[in-house]
Image (cartoon, rainbow, N blue to C red; front, side, top):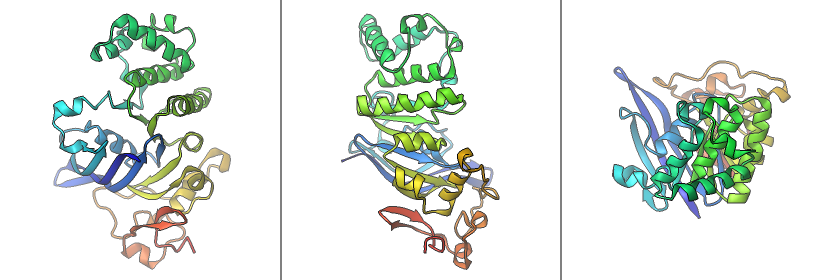
Length: 313
């Protein structure tokens, strides 16, 4: 059963007389209990989707399409109705834990604020939080509550944010670039953290990341984003072990363990997107049709791929 359905989501930002097409006609579903990953280069539109779901984009953003959560279209809700969902039923782990925490308040006080909003007794709330922090690999949580955010490592701040995000027992957790800026040791810890959140708490997650190792370990299915649209979608193991789209193959080849082979060229301008395939000028498999006709996303080997299939024969 689908907990979240995204139908034809497009997001544009005004830029003078033009518009930046950040997301173009994206559709996918997230099943209950599933971890669904969005991967791609920086600027591919992944984080914009996560923020659009909760209507956290600037007012200038032009958004179209539908986001159906538990049978409700989030884009049709009044602000007061959305407040009953945002942070409670859908929780966001932002990509910058240090920026999400107030630097002048002790960690314990910031956790208490979560329970104040939920109208739970602070004493009972802190008891729950300390228990949750221990489960999420935070040692000596009592001492941690007496410290300020800057006194914690990046990995510890990430776990603290995870604890605060899970305190409301949300139906859906959106994790935006959770390993960004973390050292290798903390990144390895992130795999354990999200595996625990998935298996022990059974949370439905939308994981937005450029960390392919994390995506492979944690995600059930993955959608690959390029220039604001999905170019490949399938089971995580299939996408990352036997990729189909030339862009996905390029992403994997660019990983350190695969020789750091860079993708040639640059992503197209979002103000003036090319007429044909957006990846055409960077693709080693492109043909005449690729420069003239934009490919539709089609079923292929149990998944979906947006390609004219020159590379798939």
